[in-house]
Length: 361
Image (cartoon, rainbow, N blue to C red; front, top):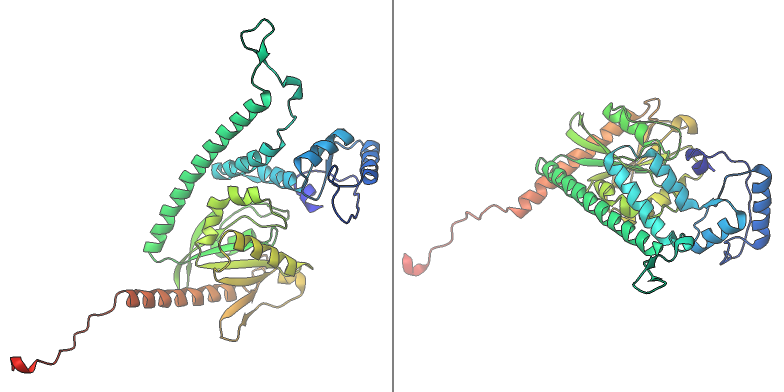
């Protein structure tokens, strides 16, 4: 599991199973849970990770049965995001997603403090439950985080409007995690962003302005990578960041050409783009890592003569000239389209002379 390795966990044992439907209590069957428990006991494992989404009840039941911490796929991804967030905005977004996830898992977390002493009677009446205190503090923190993120979203909106007034085309890099987006971003913009061979190496959106010959200035943004079954809470928390993708003029969909499941990865990325409202934004497929796929650089056009795929290697620089040419072609077409829309919205007045009425002759 690359997710576990990316979170810093060391895998001791992998237990597989197959069921027609999940068990309501443990997700896995009782026999499989016993097998997991014996393996965890023999290896003295500190945590058991399920590569599936668990309900709060299933997670609590498994922790009680296995006597160890249990993490599902959502918790593991949130843990990775918490480790990777660097900027203040990224940390706010991750914390909001974590609190939304935690809010469903507070039940029976404080049974030993279920009742506080209070009231005016001789023996004291039932006071406020610790669970209610936790929920109130959590909701207050969530409201504060959402307010701060809304302020950041408004700031981004002002920046986008300024770019729109200057008619600067915006391009966003999207793709499956570890497809090479950050490497490609650094190669195009000469930036020095973090590049590592691991999942979700970078979370924070980075924006740079680059000059493309024959096209002028273009704003390029590097966004967070997507993955299969990306938690909905993360998508909601990172909506302010992902709006850069929604408002982009062009999406560079970076694909790992050497991956045996690249078609599945393309489909998963398109699902997330559709969910955030960017499903209709023009895309340009960037077939990256061709040096590992034994492919050659080049440009592919559709039946209308438009470029729809560019084969490059961001690591070696092969094919980057073709990609810059594709960006220049897109920028020229966008400029012509904006000029046409402007002309249609401001039609020239009709200066033709009307024929004089016979009575006025």
